[in-house]
Image (spheres, rainbow, N blue to C red):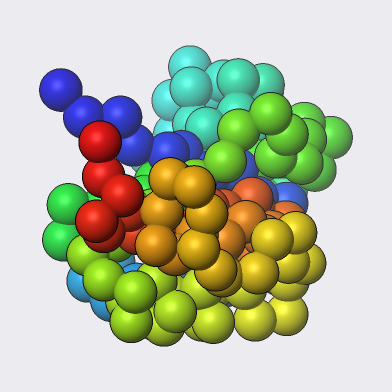
Length: 149
């Protein structure tokens, strides 16, 4: 079993996922817009938002995207404007394999965002950082190294 984040965006899902692809590598394994979705009577089942979707209004916004970068899978969609809620109460946490990788990913993902805790050592990790990216998604980057339990 794996737990994968599903991120909701307010019309900028494609830009966010392309940014994550640039930062994390891997590949965008799936992408479909609302306009490309088959018409269905079950209109509230599209994307990650459980509300009725006006397909004409959503047009080229993303109904679903999937980024696969190693063992990391991030899925995302655009919400109808009236249903969008900013990320709160959760954080995407990346466990990396070296201080250098932590530094690279922190620098890339935090660019244009808001840093709460710059990358540095903690009691539990050789390198740890907390920030929101430029799309408002909260992240942690962690390399435990010799401090792993």
